[in-house]
Image (cartoon, rainbow, N blue to C red; front, side, top):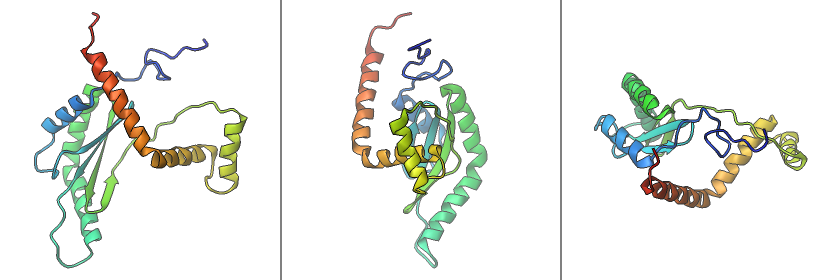
Length: 185
C-alpha cells in the first residue's frame, strides 16, 4: 500500500508508543529517584524506543591516586550498588511510557551509559547514497554499509547539534500547542 505510514505516522509503525511530554517524564523521574543519587536533576534523552537517564555523581575528594580512576570507580560503584533499585524504576517507567529505560552516570569528566538499546532501522537508498556508504566501506572507515550509516549519522549529529537542538525545541513547542488544543473524545 503506497504511502501508508501506520498509526504512528512519519514512518512509525502501529506498535510505536505514543509521544510523551518531556516535562511529565522529568517530573515522574524526579519523584521516583532517590534524592541522594545525583548532584542535580538527571539528563533525560527520550526517543520513540528508549528513555536514557544519566545523573551526575559527586566527585571523589582529592587525595592520592589518579582523579580519572577515582571517578571511574565512583561510576562503577554507583552501577553495582543501585542496580536493583534502578531496574525497579525502569520496569515502572517502561510500563508507564512504553519505552525501555537505560541508565548512565557522569563524574568528573567521565560519562558512561551502562546498557542501552541498539535498534535496527530500515531504510531504502538509491544508488548515489549506496555509493557513499560503499566508499566509506572501501576506504576502511567502516566495515559494512550499516556501520557506515551509523558513522554518517553520528557525524551529522556532531556537526549539526545546534540546528538539531533548535529543531527539537520547535517540535516541542508544536506538541505543547497541540496539547492545549481541543480534545476529541
